[in-house]
Image (tube, rainbow, N blue to C red; front, side):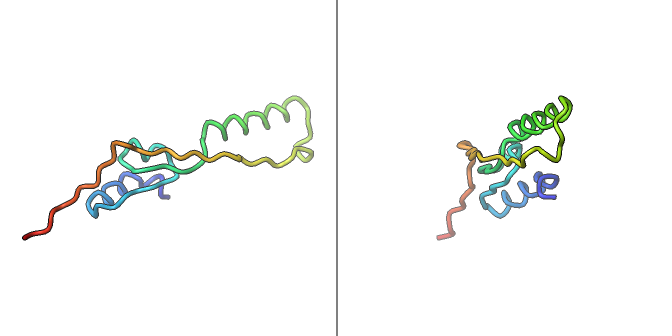
Length: 88
């Protein structure tokens, strides 16, 4: 749900002047501060490897469960929090 509502979240955190860190890498493009999560590219390649092994005749019940062992941290260095000076 958060990924589908990321534009709304970006608007809210900009209004509240808060940083936004999300799992979806596209949130960086939309205005988030950082992304920490898996690479969908790596996950897709891993899934394709499983499919290939099954199509080549391996029994799916015999395949070991694998998980992605690397997470990526992407930081938006152009991110700016707008600060307002207090009234004198």
